[in-house]
Amino acid sequence: MRQPPMILDLRKTSLFEKGHIPGAINFPMFEIGEIAQVQKMTVEEREGFYFKRSKALGAKLVDLVGFQAFSYYCQKGEMESRFFKNWFGPEFLEGKVLKGGYNAYRKAVNQSWNEKYNLIVLTGLTGSGKTEVLENLENEGVSVLNIEKIAGHKGSVFGTIDGESNIPQEQFENEIHQILRKRGPVFTEMKGRYIGTLYIPIQLFRQMEEAPKVFLELPLKARIDRLVKTYCGKDDEFLKKQLMQLKDRLSDQELNSAMEDLNKFNYRSFIERLLGYYDESNVYGESVSNYQMKISGKSPKEILVQLKKAYPL
Image (cartoon, rainbow, N blue to C red; front, top):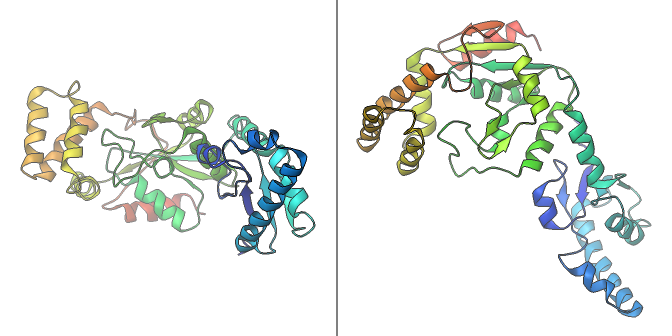
């Protein structure tokens, strides 16, 4: 398979970390404060600075891209891109500037939420294997919008797990946009609009609510097994802190019993208690009657087989 051209982001690292075109590599032309310093230089000082900088960056550029085709951009498609072209254009003719820079890209991202996407939304009770099914579909080359994976967040009261943390909102949107650009149906999972500190753009969220839904049904025992494996025995103190977030939703007896289960490492009982709460409250609005198709199985693998029969890809 032909690899897409490399993309270089010429902006300062702080701007790159806030948001960038997915897959881009940060190749800052200037560091923080350098532009202001250059503006105060004499013509001779400025030329000397540019010469040294272009020489240093040229060596890095050769190591990074060699002479393969690549694209580059800055914030507006102006200053850094102009310097880049002037310094390296004659030697690196395969370099192509992205017109309008990152600002133009972000404008396209924001406009894209009004497009109509071919979404197929997996729904089901907590622990029914929705995320695992999505991951298996993705491994088979199917277009998948895995909100939890992009956000680095489980989406439930348990929050971040295994050291994962939220990415900036801007980059969250960029990653979603990159996936939705692909042709054909896109499988995703029904979530609340807010994932930790992040949020799904309202236009996209409304499409997710209105899209065809497939309800995945897994036996209670299998759901407990999966959730114990995913959440328990890694950081019980963290789980206790997260459990306290439910203190206004659980009775004192339910909260104390769940905390006692954790203290005694009785994870199955702990998860079963919480599932009782989640199933009854239906946290994400995933009503067992609000779907177009229902697929039952003893494991996510069985469900995946049936899903692929229902949606030949």
